[in-house]
Length: 494
Image 1 (cartoon, rainbow, N blue to C red):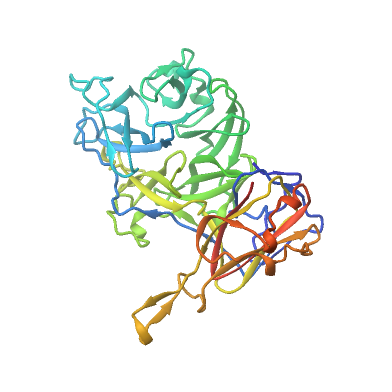
Image 2 (cartoon, rainbow, N blue to C red; image 1 turned 45 degrees about the vertical axis):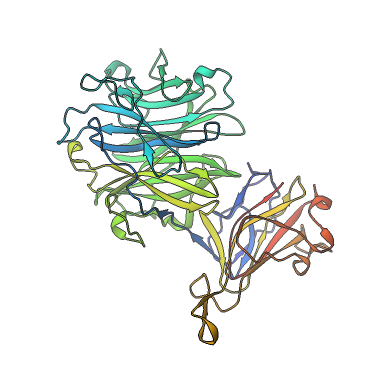
C-alpha cells in the first residue's frame, strides 16, 4: 500500500499545480493507479477518463434454470478465481418467485473454467423436494452474503470465511459468520450473530487487507430513512469493532440519492469500491467507482460519473437488457489473464416491486487490467508525480498506445487511429526521472528514455546506456510521464 506522510488535497482541475509543501510519498511495490490525485503533482495536456467495463455478449451468463432457482442475486455475493484449483468459483443466492413459490432462500455454488460458462454440479448437501441432487450449499432466511478465501489461514477448517444476513431467529438476528475448509461445507459460529440487527443493515460486503490481514465489513446503515455506508473491522472475523460512517450522500448529490452498499476491495496500492447508488424517486440502482487510501475517507471517482450504467442506456451493449433497472455488483472483481471480470446481478424490475416479481439474473462485464481510469493524450501531454521514495530497480508501465490502422488498401487507404479525435500519427510514451525540485536527473531525461510504442500491461522502461532505477533507489524523485496519442493506466516500481 502507499503510505503518504501527508495526504494532499484532491485537485479536480485537468491541469493541476501542487501545493508549495509537497508531501513525500513512500511507494511500495504495488501497482499505482490514477483514479484520484494523490500521486499527481502537475498534469498538462491530459484528461482523466473513467472507463466503463464492457458487458460480454453472452449476458446474462447465469439464469435461474433449475427447479430450486426462482430468481438469482449477488447481494453482493462472491466470485473468485482459485489459483490453487485453477477454477472460477461463485456463491450466489436463489430466491422464490410467483412461478416458483415453493423455492426457499438458498445459497448455491457454481464453477467455471472460463468465467462465462458455469457448471452447477450436484453437491448432495441440502434437500429440495425430497432430493439432494442439486448445487445448494445452505438453506437460510436471508439474501445477503459475502466471503473471502484466506490462503494464509493456519486452521484449514477456516480457510473460507463467510458473513451472511440471518433474520429467521429474531433473538439472533443480524450478521452471522460461518467457516469452511473448501467453500462448500460450512459450519456456523456457535455464538452468532457477531453483529446484531440493531447495529447494521441487511446489505454488506467483507474484504481482507493483504498487508495487515485485518477483515473489513462495509455495511448499509442509516440515520432516519437515509441509507449510507459504515465500516467496522476484525482481527478474527468474529469480533467486530470501531463502527464508523464512511460514505453518505452530500449536497452535490440529487435529493433522492441513497447509498445501498459498497463492494470494497484492495487493489494495488490502495482500496477501490463499487458504490451501489440508490435513486429513491426512480427506485433504481446503478454503480459509481470510489477510491480510498485508508478505507475510511472515500473519493467519488470522476465526479460521480457512472461506472456500470444500467442496461437500458444501451451504451454499445448488444446483450439482453436483463439489467435495465437495478445492478448489484459482486464483492470484488476477479483478475485473470490481463482482464478484470466484474460480476453483478441485474434486474428488469424496480426496487419497489414485490419480491416475488423480481427477475434477477447474473451478468459479467470486463475491464482491462488496472483499467478503471486512464490519463489520455490525443496530442502531447504529461503528468508529473509528487515527490516519491521507492525501493527497487525496475519501472513498468501499463499503457495503451494508439496505432494507425488502414481502411482499404494501396494508395486509396485511409489511416485511422485508436482514439476518436486524435491527430494523425502513431502514439508513444516516455518517462523522465526528476529530482525533488522537478529538474531532470542527468541520464534520465525523457529524450533518453526508450519509447514505449506498443500497448502493454507491464512494459519495462529503460534509458539509454542501459540505465534503470537501481542507481536512484532510496532517493526522493519525481516521475514525469510524457505521452502522445496514448492512455496511461498505471505504473509500478519493483
